[in-house]
Image (tube, rainbow, N blue to C red; front, top):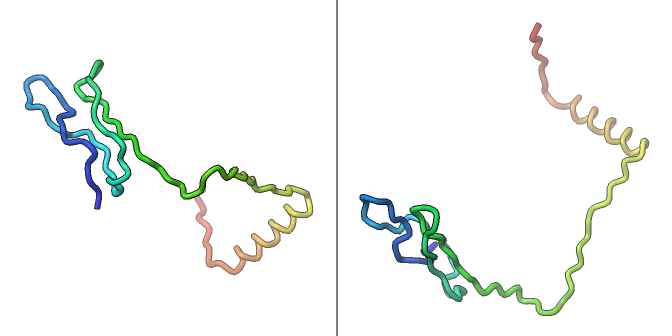
Length: 99
């Protein structure tokens, strides 16, 4: 279940009681290093922050980033159109005449 990361007032509207309406919820409270609020400088809301220890389980291993490559050759486009036409012909469709 989710738990809030701060329990102090975060909203200070004039004429109202301070309340805790701005928050960050987490399901990994054991990983929180520090959380809290900052003094509001430009609004009635205190900024909320939370530093979390994120352990990826892999240390010093380079990330390999692989991007998909697409071949937009004329023959591949024709194959795609033929495949799409076959699928559409076996699908129940109807046309709407808006004239």
